[in-house]
Length: 229
Image (tube, rainbow, N blue to C red; front, side):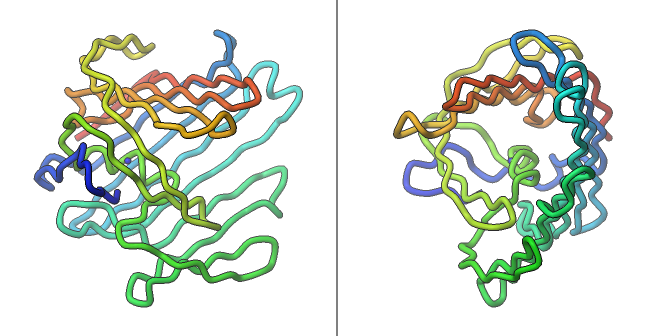
């Protein structure tokens, strides 16, 4: 995977376009060197959904930072869009950095628990969490123009603006896909840059993602395998 503002780039697609189950694997690389592996699952049952993403360090990164990070999102499907109700982040080696968040849509408040403290954050409508954001792309029809996503990491809500770069064929370990290529619009050198390629054949599912950190770290997330039904 979202809030759409004035210049709409994505329009809601029929809810039936969303698969009932997706299991995907990604490889994480830096300058062509494997540094991690990601396993994700998406399950839709009626008007509810659950997403799990488990990232594990591999290769040289495992020797320097042997960590496993699990992200989980659970919520409901409203008018064909994902609406998170709970988001959790857990770290095996550093559990104190774990986050638990409840999306209270009736009160318009995000209830966040971090390092033993609870905080209340204003919750704008259609806010996504870190993992539901990527799956929300499946419910949208790509169009030209900029669009803004409200995304929460479980502690705060931030705005992310993306634009459609174009349609192109992208190479991944799982194969080549005709895709929609989006990139994040940044407004300063300190903002991280991101690009995402959505495979048309898989309901606009992300098959490749690239993150560029302002400090120079570039991480590519490349699809290895996918099963959907």
